[in-house]
Amino acid sequence: MMRSAIQLISSNWPYWNRTEGADHFFVVPHDFGACFHYQEEKAIERGILHLLQRATLVQTFGQRNHVCLKEGSITIPPYAPPQKMQAHLIPQNTPRSIFVYFRGLFYDVGNDPEGGYYARGARAAVWENFKDNPLFDISTEHPTTYYEDMQRAVFCLCPLGWAPWSPRLVEGVIFGCIPVIIADDIVLPFADAIPWEEIGVFLAEEDVPNLDTILTSIPPEVILRKQRLLANPSMKQAMLFPQPAESGDAFHQILNGLARKLPHDKSIYLKPGEKMLNWTAGPVGDLKPW
Image (cartoon, rainbow, N blue to C red; front, side, top):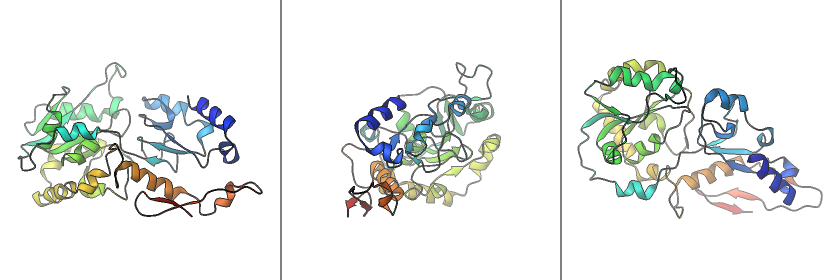
């Protein structure tokens, strides 16, 4: 698919060939981004196409020092439907009576029949250690009250699956549920707009058996501070893709990331006698010709 796209644009327009795609970007919202496979071993084996080596990759996948995350990629949040989430909002003063909440797979039997490889065993460890713990509301069932339940929870688990990212990151921020990020070496989206260290809890995959002790030891004032930060509307806006786009939303955060990648010397793109429109970054999401 990617080869076909590149063949089409390179044979119809002159821009790709003169820079080998250095002034192009591709959106690759897949579990393993530009490696195009949701299972890690196969994704690594496939690697990133040589044709894409100079292009910018805009992708949901983000993990440090991984062959599927090219240096210079822009990590973005997964899509969560803004209108659907808006329709499930409950009163802000609703008590958070659930301490830890999670809905999703713990084992992927179909693709990991022997167990232990899916989520590198982190999700299985959550289930085996806390399935009977009254502080944990965890299940494979996905109820119709899923969004409402997250708004009643203090902590929402965001463990890796086949890839480190999870839509629960977006849902946690939107619904004010403190994300507990269980994914070693994850690269999170929009670090300049979202203070992840201040709003979330980061847990090493090997420390999952101690999850209850770690969360119950967090002082109440720290929890309140994280919840106040999560209540910031601009932070929520930065994680969403509303239509039409709105100032400060995820689309504009992507534009900011692309603007920062523009080279200072545009002349490297020009052939003798050729003219090119130059761009510079203005305020948030504002690109202006100069």
